[in-house]
Amino acid sequence: MNHIVIIGCGIIGATLAYELSLIEGLKITVIDKQPPAQEATGAALGVLMGIISHKVKGKAWRMRQTSIQRYETLIPELEAITNRKIPFNRQGILMLLPSPEVTTDDLPFWEKLRETRRNQGWELNILDKAQLEKICPQVDVTGREYIGAIHSPQDRQLDPTAFTLALVEAAQHNGVDFKFGVSALGIKSTSNQENSSARELETTSGVITADKFIISAGLGSSPLTEQLNQKVDIRPVLGQAIHLRLSHPLGKTKFQPAITCNDTYVVPRRGDVYPATDYWVGATVEFTQDNGEVIADKELLENTLQSAIATCPELAKAEIIRTWSGLRPRPEGRPAPVIEKLPGYDNVILASAHYRNGVLLAPATAEIVKGMVLESNG
Ligand SMILES: Cc1cc2nc3c(=O)[nH]c(=O)nc-3n(C[C@H](O)[C@H](O)[C@H](O)COP(=O)(O)OP(=O)(O)OC[C@H]3O[C@@H](n4cnc5c(N)ncnc54)[C@H](O)[C@@H]3O)c2cc1C
Image: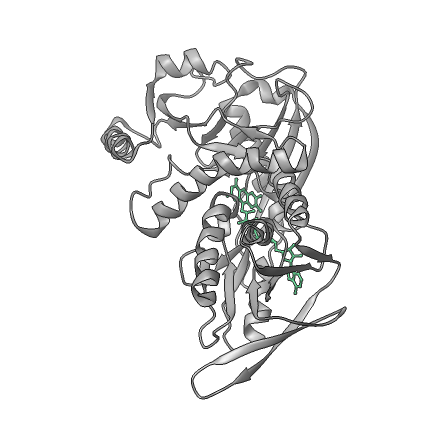
């Protein structure tokens, strides 16, 4: 039996584990130094900017489209296996077009994108200011000028932690072996003149022998590739966010999309309470300093909160439940994500460095990796 070891159980490793568990004849082991969904995944807002993204062709668009399509089947599939609900907001994404950052000169771009999406089988709606005010009264159209808004009804938002935990449970149900609290220390390989083959993974709980190794360890991927003399440089970009609670839902209870304005997100947080009275607000984008450190800047978080309040003034009355930060894995000097066979190795696959879109791109990543696994099995 073909044994595959997946290193890292954030949203990427967990999605890989579940999707690969659907292929017959594979033995799959997942290791993580922590419980699942602790690092970038545990900090993410879960907004899936697929149809509303500016990507219209090539791999970047194909991956977005594949993910948005797969999420529609994956969520009910996982809910049926695990018998629990995954918070999945089907009311789309509403992108506000504030003035003066956006002008009427930008509208032809959106009209063209709407046309492209229509030809691709997707929907985007351009709303003028009056329509925006009507469907989303929580947005203050008097305090700030808006050209209008874009509503993308087929884009989604989900709870990344609940989703990852459901993937783990469903993959376990399909026979995947998870080892949490186990760190990958290094991969041992053998070489011939053309290629190297990884054979054994050294871990804090002993050696695991396998036929294939998939590195999906986020920021932890860099040291593992370095140890194989093929360093893929992945660096942290910090993001901070806030959980807010109101006594009532914002705007209309029946229309609660994720709202974005100037890169600040106001995300209805579906918990046990329906309609949502909790909201996630985020996220900052903070790069490393010259000394390589990245420290959460309180002022940037406050700016993000104030930007959300400028959009939806009622948020000023909200109670702050918690604030948090996470590190996004960003590849240095190349586009995100990195999904490839590690150069020089015939059985090591890297699926990492998804930067700001790991939740969005997890299903498409699994689709690509599945292709690589099947190709080398065939
Ligand atoms: C504030 C914030 C908001 C975000 N919002 C969004 C959003 O709205 N939409 C979106 O698509 N993306 C969003 N992202 C980005 C998204 O979170 C990441 O792209 C995604 O979570 C990356 O997933 P991952 O599984 O690759 O990495 P991680 O979640 O970091 O998981 C890596 C795992 O590998 C394990 N690991 C590392 N080294 C080792 C080792 N040596 N041995 C064993 N295990 C190891 C870690 O313990 C960890 O569990 C956001 C990120 C942040 C920080």
